[in-house]
Length: 246
Image 1 (cartoon, rainbow, N blue to C red):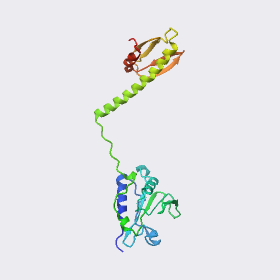
Image 2: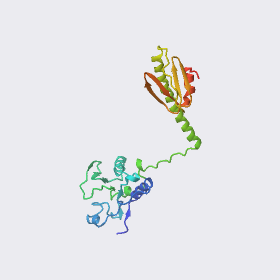
Image 3: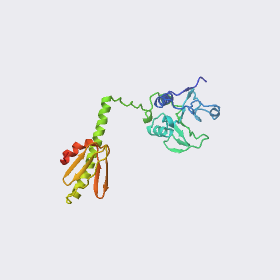
Image 4: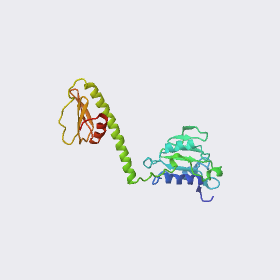
């Protein structure tokens, strides 16, 4: 017997995991079996035992949810990949068999805190195939593009414009409804003194008067009359829309 080594495909798999989840826990990682594994027999009874060419065809991968490594998701993605290198998978008392069925695992170790991946110890064309494993969770994620101060300012402006437009539409609809319901009375809808630092629309049938300086958008009813506090920047839009007098 020579010096055991891990199958090249599993070396690749482990390296991809390390790259995708830097700093991940390796507490339950393992490849070559201990004495208990060796006592079970050969590489067929446990792929953690070296085969006749001193190659170990199994790898245990520690679950580390804090690092984003979810072994259930990893098992599902390996299963869905239909990669021919996979012999079977075990995690959390479930085994994904070589015939693509998933059943209850009846062994002594439920592999609750790690995922077990086995490959066929008689297929060097597969277990020593070093191609990367094509799994969504192992694919490199591009770093978010760095935005310039000008781009950030433009995005903030566009967001403010969208909020402003929505506020104008909402207030316009409220004002239209109020004017329609009060047009026949010939009386002011309300007369109030605007609080300091606020703006207010004073509504008369067919006319509106605005006091600039509002900072908030609120609306409520008082004795059937609408009182609207609106941002000062809406003034020009409302003036244009309703032909209000300053």
